[in-house]
Length: 71
Image (cartoon, rainbow, N blue to C red):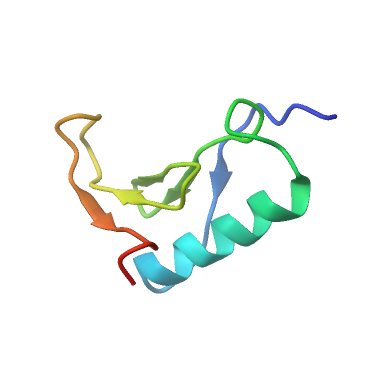
């Protein structure tokens, strides 16, 4: 197993698209949450579960701006 340590920058038009791209990359590696890095899209963090979080804030202050499980 290879540990990926750098964040992944995602280029996409929407938060939904960014989440989908991130999740596809995550799923292709077989790595778990401790081994796969966060994603970044237009300053927003994408967490392992595919949620896109409000830019400029950290959890718990950051609001989820896209949740793939609500889509």
